[in-house]
Image (cartoon, rainbow, N blue to C red; front, side):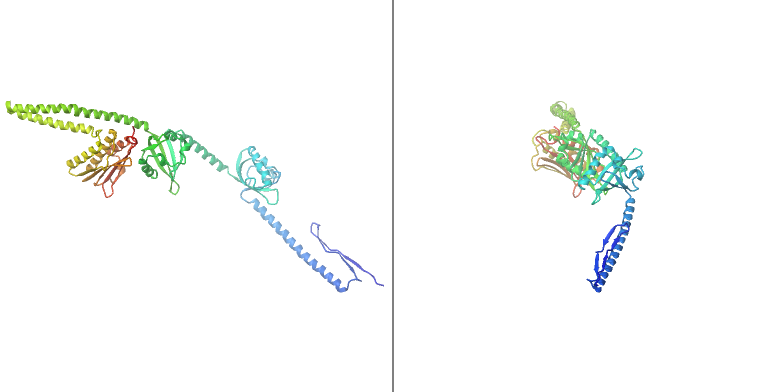
Length: 524
């Protein structure tokens, strides 16, 4: 009788937690259907599958070990980042915190609490908005921002937070840096800047700052008032647009100088295009490497003072003219009359008293000398007359007189007519030339002097060049009374004066004056 044997084989692989991980397929064996070889093959397959399961189990155990080590590593890293670090849940709970959050609370007092408990009240709405926004879109909220944390003692700590979402979760991790010291320093700097701003804005003097390209970057209210222009029409514009052409070169040279420059006069052009006379103190601004980064100037408006000085000079000049005319027209004519009478007396005495004729002749000669001195005195008081070519004629006469008196070469050159309707301007130019010639002879030991009066596109240029020993130190020479008077005369007529060593030796004095509708930029 044929018997049937059924064998049911079911293999389970259980993990340490008691969970089912693998099932081998159930095998039904009927000895009447399978041969011995087939049964052996199936058992062999089962053994192979069991070995593979054992291998995989070992791999899983190794993975579990590495996972624990990794968890330990990152936990250690989290606890020792050097910055306060927290893990925040979706509901604002702080689920983890390292030991670097020094706000007076223990870790147990912080973990499990909402971060809103520790944030300053005025910062909570903003931070809560960031909290919700980044969970919808990580890029919807800033990654770095500042806020205040309340310490346990009630004081506040200023914090810089860097925060990001943990991929695949609704949790975020943030690191915090205490920036209280930096914040206090910034506040102190802001306070200092505010005090400086108030000081600068309350100054009566104008303050202007320009960058290395000469562009205006800052002006105070007084500077705007001096130029009669609003701030928005000054900031961003080149400073050269507001400086007279005659003064711009000197402005740039002194501005870039590292040496402290003495205050000097500068003519500006304001909103109404009228010349503005100022006294400036300027200096360069350099970076830590000594490179030029810009300059500043403190400016005082002296236009009113210049007008008063001109009025005084006008009165003085009118008095000089008056005295000159009285000497020439009154005293001079009387002396001429006396000279004629003594001459007649001399002729009469020849017939009646020959002995007295000699004395009458001496009196006549003395009167003639007095007439010459009176004429020289009158001409000295008013060397330039309001006639056509008055300045040119006076300069040419002075050149001839210098040559004859001192026995040297003194020439005058004027290629074209120079219009000069203001006798005051012409007089100052004459005396500048006269003082330059005196210095060339007295101090420069010159044997050759040339005077040039040129008119170049409405720029009058008077230059006196000599072949003397020159000026070795301009800064020391500028303290002399002669050069100071020359500078003063130039400023009075709105001119610029330069004294420099001439090419090839000697000294070159140049006085430049711009002509306007009448005489130019001089005070009118």
